[in-house]
Image (cartoon, rainbow, N blue to C red; front, side, top):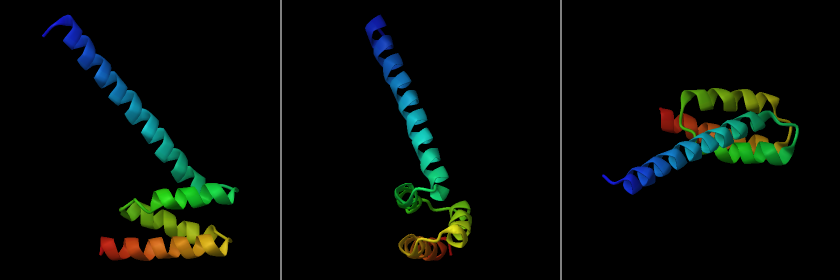
Length: 89
């Protein structure tokens, strides 16, 4: 492989690694925002949680339902939890 090809592959791999790290940080931030004082951040975090399919996500949603006071967000979280429980069996 030529030097140019090696540099191209190295650059692509470095870009992929940086992109992966940025995506993970964003996902972690959304998970933490589920208990944010700001309603908008909690709504965004619920949208993120809609894509989660794990027992851990179900546990977090149960805790969130106890904590949340906003009726619309409670309904959304309850629906997400029910759908998640059905999918997990």
